[in-house]
Image 1 (spheres, rainbow, N blue to C red):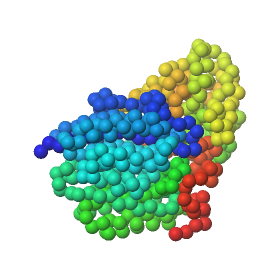
Image 2: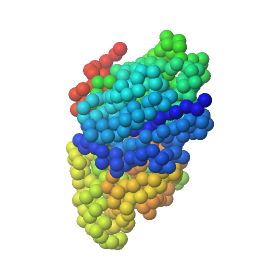
Image 3: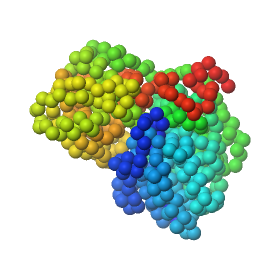
Image 4: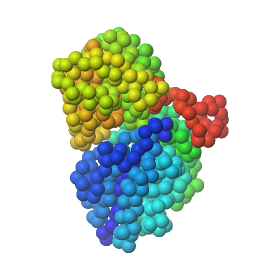
Length: 497
């Protein structure tokens, strides 16, 4: 029997401390593709949609894809953007309801709108109103989702990535699709349970390459082989969303025997709580990082400095200047740095030719309280570009993106990538496409929290991370939380449960 399946992708990781709202234009600048255009763009890459398309081919589904929409992490999603993009999914589901056998959605799990804290729950509630309680709905999530009880009640099937850096999106799309197929055939009747602990996030943000998450994922994979277990997801949570249902969760999508599966989830959640002090990373100050960079002698590869605190992939502005300032003051040579998100300066540099000496006020324009104010610098224009690049790494290999107007400015011994649109560094082509080969440098400073490791650890002689004091600082006590429930770890560090 051939089944009719509606698919869509609609995701945003919302940093509620970022003062720039995420409107429809923010989605349009990053990614809005409808129907077949979305499948042409994302259907053969490392995406959930590619996994959905794999299932459609393997199982002979008739697939109706509505849209693929995403925006860079930033402030709350506006009602207009939510209604237009989420509304397109609801409208299509209602129009095709009589012919549909199932719905398969790639969401994120940390969307906050300007009218509700639980964007995914709101979308699923509207979807249930359109198609009724019996239509099987499967969703995929980023492990940095703040998974709510409403999401678990309204989605029958929930599968989150198991890797960070995220390299298994297509695989997870296939996993969710396979469960949906079994559901449509009547082989299983899935439900999803949720276990939660009072923390802003798992202490290492879900890092899956080292630390306790390695063991938890291994246990989850083994448990998925047990009878009646369809998927186990460990979501670290997203600490930069000031909402009530925040923090790490363990979910199990199952068919029968809830008590057994809940006991498994509780055991993992208990271990997350017990290991809440087991921090893997050592966060250096920018001065400490610059001192290490100054003394670094390249042998096998460059020193990579990851600025966790100014990660656009977590909703930071990407224009923090503290690390760059420290590197310049330490006279670091043979170095690259990027990105600095500064559309005004990028436009200024486009008014010059390569080789010109220019004076700029670089970065620090969105909110100088976080990560430092503008730097007055003199440098040489090395390149101007429209900002287009095509990734070739493990995460997004084959996908093309754009920084918008882009330039490379050399200040002393540092080549600085100046861009107009915020995106974290996670692929070597984000430098190489603009004449900078990070593998050939002695020092590379970049703005990324963890994803950079997939591409940059293989070329690195050493990796260190720092906290520049920007908006995605790992020191959450610097953020003005108002809505999270108290007590909560680590804001209330001495609490117990």
